[in-house]
Length: 307
Length: 196
Image 1 (cartoon, each protein chain N blue to C red):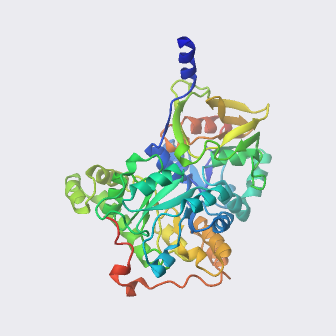
Image 2: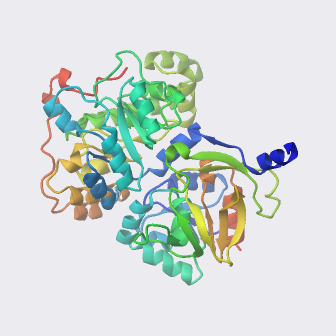
Image 3: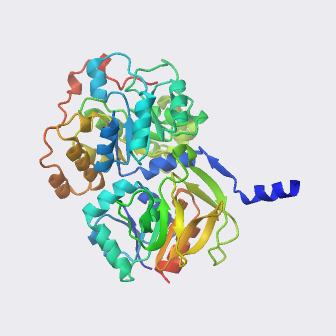
């Protein structure tokens, strides 16, 4: 009896879930793609048909959260489940910053990625979620390299710019992407003995600072988010070094979501081909109206959330 | 040495190119039928099958790749989504495009959702002394073979399911060697399919 048991064990290969390789592996597969915010199964279907690589399930898109105010929380599990049943692409969902119980719930529902997001009302004023405790991978927003490396230090497997969600104004996402890329370039040129002080100044873990200095890139994929509304916006972010784009309000707050969604997908794949971009950008009807972020009050900006 | 193209419409094409470059093999991105004309082999990376369905048809690469494969001038290696595309049929999704280079039927996301993605050590029979130490195979929302034709050769299995197989000029696998530093499968593709 004991002998038989042993031989069975031997034929089953030992496998591991939730390793960093497996977590950031999914982000690698999403590269060169568009992740679209959706609030209903119908929108999820439109997003998948348009060629989205994943959808982000949430209760309200950022521009509505901005308009309506109130506490923005994780989406209703019923909505998330309906979306999971509707599409075959990965389904992501947002949890509030520091709200590890929301994250536990989302993991139990088997969402494919959790966005610990500044778009929702933060649940903790000092601490983010300890993302190493989870099998499900996390994406987090960052405005600069220090913030990106703090999130990676906490276990994030994917970084995105914060931009200014729900604004339809690309300027903040551009600032954040340039800031991160500039800081990476700077690190690669610093002599070894300056790295510890640089880690102190960035507020980032020393080992990760060293890794970035040696490799000239983040140790996990780097996507763009926050303010993307047109195919040209998507191309701009890709050319600045983003490896994929998240589009929030930009698609379902425009006048023709299926056409705009498809055009942004084409723009991300063909971001180096302006002729084709001109072709896919035609006749899309109106983009979302948007808000000029330079006229926005600091207190109304979502990007300051997170520590 | 022939140049190897990596289909770069969407997915983890960069890591395949990096792997080829590390091996000293000439490599380039393939985004258009014109790019395809310059290569002597093609790797189809991991990515999202529904997205790729739209992008392949839009770019005209669906027909261009098929034509060159059928006239025998384009060996193909597909990983994960790439393996799905090489199949004859996709379970539950008959409307999605696939090339039909290998006589098999595959099921998408067959291990479950992302929390069920995993890595495991597997043994391979690749010949050329590449057997020996186990291969760290990474499965990300991976597909499974549900029907396999008699003419398909299998090189590796995980829990008895075929995970690396070939037929004619096409190699396919459900896992991602490009997420590791182990270039044995890429070398096998180059030696036995591209430069054979």
